Amino acid sequence: MVTLNFFDTFSRELINFIKDIKNVFIDIFNAIHHFLNRFFGDEFLLMLLIAIVAIIVIFMFRSFINHD
Image (cartoon, rainbow, N blue to C red; front, side, top):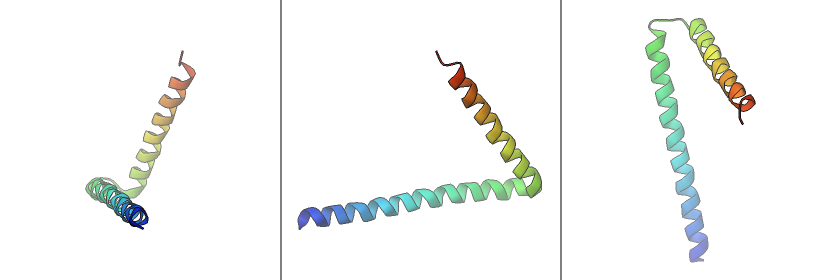
């Protein structure tokens, strides 16, 4: 019974920890979006995000191809 109680408590605390981490990332991205939205429109920010993701994917693809 003690073991089940331990696993139950551990799983609940782990889920709460993951939720807290998720909320931190959401708050950070909301703050970044709010700051950038003062200077640029949403369309420009979306294009910037797509360009950044495309560059990251290109670098990853090139690193996999050139891997020796």
